[in-house]
Amino acid sequence: DSADENENLEEDSDSDDDEDDTAELMKELERIKKERAEETARKQAEDETLERAARKQELAKGNPLLQGAGGGGSFQVKRRWDDDVVFKNQARTEPKKEMRFINDTIRNDFHRRFLNKYMK
Image (tube, rainbow, N blue to C red):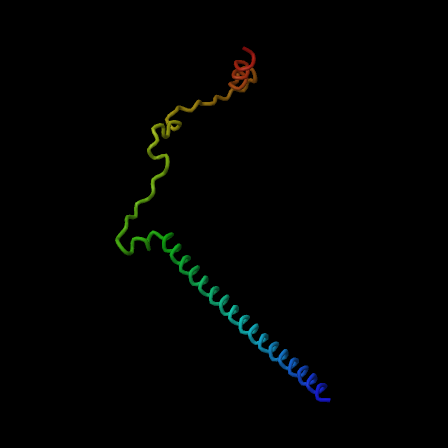
């Protein structure tokens, strides 16, 4: 009888230990989940503040009035890429050919150009 009682006590203590271990592991798991959730929330808040700061700085860079606030910067307009080109505005000075209107299909300018181009 005492051997049976010892076996029953060992089984009870083993099951109690298992339940205690399981409870401890569950508590540990919940603690780890909570820490991870706090960590992700902290990272999101940190990223959001960095993004806000970057956006604010970008907006300040884009506004030329805010750039000169610290040191009185120059408000010079940027030059165009073709400002220093040698052959600029050449087509403006060329005389335009005056189109004449002749009410004769054989003597008008279009017919003469056509004949010169294709019937030489």
